[in-house]
Amino acid sequence: MKYIHYTGRPTLTVHGFGDVVIEYADVLGASGQIDTVDVLTFVEDGQAAVETLLIGPGGQIAISSASEDEDEFEDDRESPSAPQ
Image (cartoon, rainbow, N blue to C red):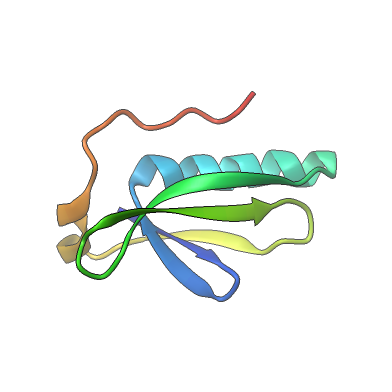
């Protein structure tokens, strides 16, 4: 599990989503474009939800690893691919 840190707050998501979002943000920043990304997230009780992020140049986004306790929610599906 990883946290996406965006707009001053952490969002818990699976490893693949966090990695892809940060890579896509880098591509958008380099090309001067913006886009929205729907991210699979988990709320405090472990329920899945979807959050939409607006990413692009000038946005500050980071990822960090979650604690081992939070890894219990890890989704076993394939990691998503970055948009082309």
